Length: 417
Image (cartoon, rainbow, N blue to C red; front, side, top):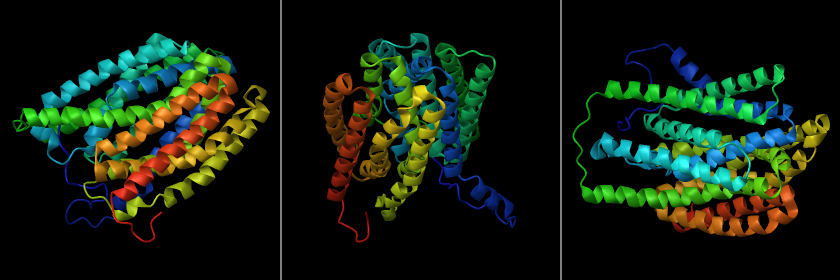
């Protein structure tokens, strides 16, 4: 492992170069566009998956949510932790320390995915556990590349994996294999291919850096890291449980068919949050926070047309595939929460930079307590409609708390939203 360089993705080319082509290429293939392409391909994979009967898609969705939530719960949020460390942190701690944290997170992800699969009552332990470990490896190792401003490399791999996933689904569809378990195997394979690819990229970076200096941290520094991981992960764990645990409860209390429809609506609306995700990662990776980053209005405005287009697409799909006719209504119920989440991602990442892990943890835990009560109270009675409305309310609560905490951390700047 190595530490962040001082270069920027917008740095000029070699000294003395007058060729405008590299700069033009960087503008055309911007990280944001690559991330949108990656998310678009993931959305396309979700669209292709509607070729499955709703119950089979429910099995695929159950495997996905157990794996992604398992990676979030067991992964110790090392990707965000590494992004938020100051320059010089990796060298001061030593590569062995970072590797030990990484291995621990992979093992915990496997355990968490197994428990979530058991709770949902739907899906495969092999798929859930295997995909969770692959996701943890990819996310954590990607954060090392992002510390080096490797946005293009990481998002390119995300886009490529999305393209492979779409191709795999189409191959199964054209050959008549409409089995959710088999489609889940393809998803598992894509996670591991992506994990191996990003590991190869980062190992190449490490070789270029050369031998690392001897660690300079003492026992107090290592204990401080553990406390920081605990504080940060508690908050992100709470956020991810708020975002995804409702799908586990839908699987448990409502069944595979409704889960397949609900998960489709969730995936469609999450596409509108692409700009907010990229912005949040840039805020975390940036050593100096731009005061204008406090403004969430541009992110929300860019999310509105995408969210509306997603709802319209779900309505068209419901017309073509009657078993998915409820998807557009679920998307409409999720829309307010999607916009709140887009703003909340910016505010939460800024809160982490300005006030540290404790502030973001408090906001996330309060939201999770609220969401858990609402989920258990509503989903068994109101099904997927209740899940969508409860989710939107929970996202709005988190955004409100994050913004309120951020306002207390700085003097108010005129013109910010």
